[in-house]
Length: 457
Image 1 (tube, rainbow, N blue to C red):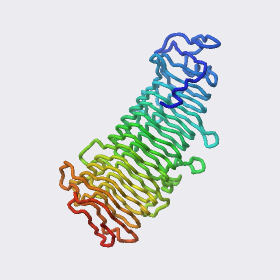
Image 2: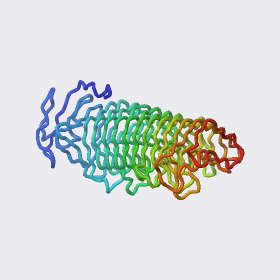
Image 3: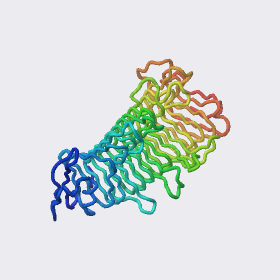
Image 4: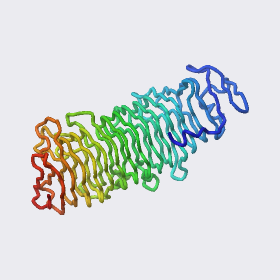
């Protein structure tokens, strides 16, 4: 429990009720006055009546067809079964002020299958006037047509211990955020529906705006969350984030578990890479055994359509457990995929039943270190190889050391077929691999250097 949660606000409290379709009763102010409910027939009117620093308590069910605009510092909480349900494809709350706090608010969207605009809580700051002091704690958000929580230009938000289910696009979406903590949330069943992508948690920017107007999200900690069920796309994502920490999360049943990937400029070109990213201590399980998912973790820099690197990614990928990821009938798939990086380390990860490769170093990785990882049952049913460490492309300098293969109980055409595999294409131009201290004796072919040009032991 955070310090924020333990410290109750010393603010006035409003008790809300309505004579509307789902709510009856009286509205009272616990301090200076008693409000007549006939003057407050809408949730918006109660929020408007409150003063900055007040607490608004929702004690009944509300049906709303337009967003509730919050333009002052308030604490909003549900008590005694209170809730807010939207009747149209609209946001439930539209926040335009700093120091707004949501506690135990129950939100339900009815446009889950018939819209693409709706967020339960949308927070909108600007570059010159970012939103500060946002707190969203222990809320329950179900069935919104786009996002659960969507925040633009927020500094140091705390989004903690919320449950978000059946969002159609994103569970928690941060655009041009700075700092803050996303912790202990449960996000399930992000459906994607007719939208092209879907995310459990995403830290990104609006790519159709110049970088000067929409900077990279930076310095955010994402820790202790459960993301379960984004089978069409990505569990946790950053597009060109800066100094993001993704720590000790559980990601299940997602097409890609954790995606550390580039971002585009307004012309649609990938020119911004994610840098300074830490992906540590996460548990990522595809929940399938047929090799139909994509990588559990991918770190990719910004490259052009011709393969030219516009900006290198950098990351530390350590102490994660990845199970059942990689598309087994595609040779360049893997549990962990690394591409166009500089000074990136992949260390002490456990890769279990990944296919057809455990770790794939694709191309343009400078100073990549792959060390002390364990690989259990790297497999393929359709490929002619299955490698623990696969180095396939050009322009790379890598150190591969002290990794280990383990034979488990997986049954397939190929299991642990190769330990370290350097493809022939890696010899042109400029790929160098130094390998030492690896234990690939559990593999049929411990080392295969098709390039015939590397220092491998």
